[in-house]
Length: 178
Image 1 (spheres, rainbow, N blue to C red):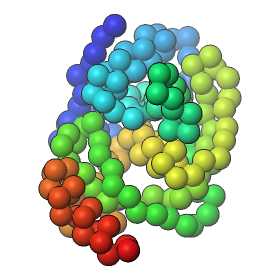
Image 2: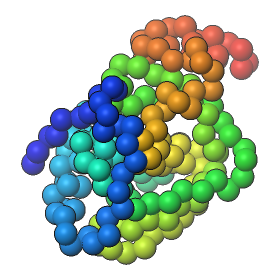
Image 3: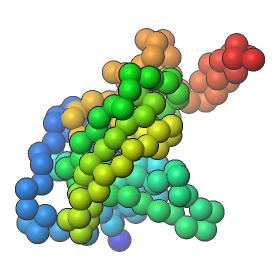
């Protein structure tokens, strides 16, 4: 088990596009995924991309919100993924990031997406998802392209310390949506 150091906002690894993994047998993917999983869980995250642990591979993991159970955590692995919107419909919601600890931003994402990737065993996986599941995949996929959620804010001022966002923005947003 290894809990890895997470790159923080300002580190150049976070703004570089990653490289495809052409030969799955050339790197120790099982160890990378295990260490990424330990790191993500230790940091209480829902997803983690390779650049966040200083690797330039096109791989990310995430806790699947559609099949999360109280006593079991299901972690999905996406290698060399592609993501496409299903429609132009978007939704705004608050996001955080392990590379930007203690901060939150109101981010606009596509509501429904389709994806394709390879899993840890080299098997092709595809699917269509929406809501939180789609949001998490888009967030992690952005990391592989050197994009942080701060560049996708729904409003330039909708970013700040999470505790302040909880007190002011979310309360105000909830009152206005009634």
